[in-house]
Image (tube, rainbow, N blue to C red):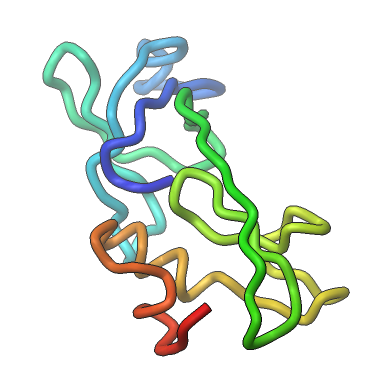
Length: 119
């Protein structure tokens, strides 16, 4: 999920339970904790785990990467193996974790620049 993505909180427990079902906007990821800063509609910001946040906007495209001979799936600006829809795919021998974390930290970076290669 990249900054600016509308999302909805779910499966929260204890003190954050009141946010279940509420919509917000992803602001940034906190690399040290792996949590996402979500700004809820009431101007309240909370740090949530990815498993507790569902993206409401969904935009995807498939690109052929000539340098590696495989298809790359882009979902909301993040890269995945197109055939198996995985961020890390042992079958296709691709790993998009670094590219995706960089994209989450700075959505203005094109994936090919983050990896230092051109598709």
